[in-house]
Image 1 (cartoon, rainbow, N blue to C red):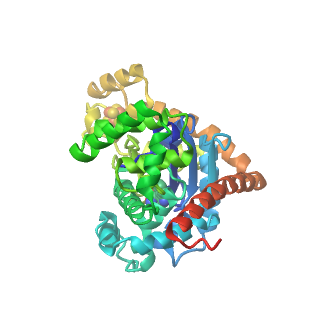
Image 2 (image 1 turned 120 degrees about the vertical axis):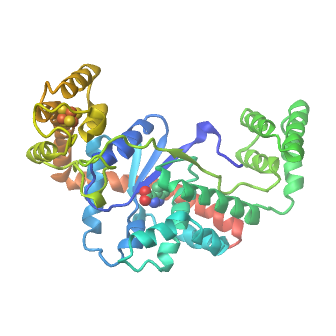
Length: 405
Ligand code: TRP
Ligand code: SF4
């Protein structure tokens, strides 16, 4: 396992621009991004090419959806001072890396990714027997590897894509990481550590290579990180030499599983556009009120005098997200004894959702009225991303042997 050391970890994640963001996105993905932006160097991008893999025939709204999505990110609290925000298709280096990775990626790896068949079945009305769609997870690999990201926050459904990314990176390093004289160069680098440390490095390397001792591997990595005498190139080489695979050009990322959002939809199922049970981040206050009032409750409570059971009621799941213990006790008691009506019960939820979304919508409005600012934020993100991406591509081209310098 070639993993980036913790302190160097860069976080990267993307989201496809497919329509309005809703509370499920906010409580699942966005709040997590907002937390991560304080802890890591984060890159967040709009995956518009990924949207094209399924929506290639309906492109009229893609650009507008992308801007609106970015505005929702900003309004929700993604801070361009901490995290870089950009649009995938504006950093075409992703495409070059995708192409180069496609050369070494066995078809079977892509055909075996679960989302390939699942989505084809789910979106039967679309012809997804396309080259682009098959390559969806490999494009995602390029998105990740072009920034040598260490951590990739994703939902459960995307973990297989990060797994593929790791395999592709490993294969790439294996094929192109073999510098001529790698062995000799490694030995020279080891000597720079001084006798004692060099000996320790070799022992740890042996323990890993001969006995598969992963603890020894981790210790050796920590040892390398603490070495003042090594150049970056030495260190990278010795990371690679530990596992005998050669130089690490593309480090393997790790999935950072986003905790599943507890936010239920209006019908108690997962909140999702395809179920038509969403509260959009842009729904106005009246719409929020109406949607929540209409929300179904425990079907046993036909009359006000019928006692209910919060366990059988989707409104209760919303109390789990929004309410204090006091309010929750009030709900439990009032529901089971028919002491409160369902509309009473929904009131604190309506208030909480409105209080949550109102300031967000005000910020969204400001950004909407100041597109120049949004464009500037995205342009800065693009520039930053583009520099990183070009550095990686230089090394990739060099490793492959098509640098023409
Ligand atoms: N496929 C991801 C999704 O549908 C979006 C995405 C594209 C992504 N490229 C990425 C996520 C790179 C993480 C890293 O949610
Ligand atoms: Fe659901 Fe509340 Fe009505 Fe009980 S009182 S059924 S928890 S909405």
